[in-house]
Length: 242
Image 1: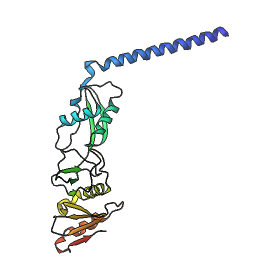
Image 2: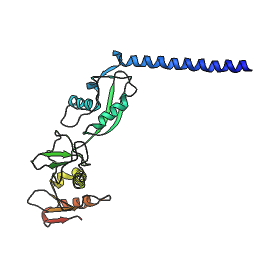
Image 3: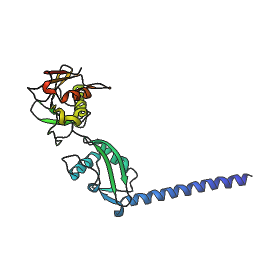
Image 4: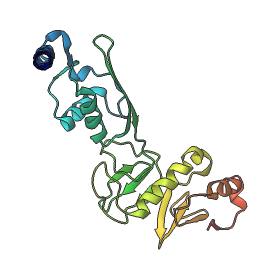
């Protein structure tokens, strides 16, 4: 009986050692594959969309900087997908990383949801910077042409971050809600009077739309505004939506 126990114990030990050796050899083999030229992929060849107004090569160069990547990627790197997810997510143009597809073959595709400029914020020096629907400050290259404009009531928290002021973030949400209808509305000038957001087609003429505080989870102000849009010429100088 004792002999059988010893033999069983030795079998377990030897089996464990062999399993550990196989895992070690497999790990060494996989590490060697990481430097194998057959599995190297140029970072600049990643298939992904680029922000409007920026070419893919310069966009990928910035993502590579954010992720501290080398010029060549190993397609057999176990952490590659997670590292790419983190690097793309850090870029101020990226709202979300929807999918990373590695393979089949020498192929690497990244599907992104990119931020869309909805509001231009005018700084004291006259510079206009774009924010997205969440009030996140976008890079300088973001096109502000034809965006509604808001004079900055405060300074931003930083590139790729929410502005840090509920007025700017609220105005951005309003601009996003009105964007599909701006061909009709033409409300291009935003400003705050206290906590109330005022909208105008022209800085000095035409009716003033008092939107009120931007926040509103169940907001019917867009619908009410559209009901008035086609006969503004007959509307008094003040449209109060509060």
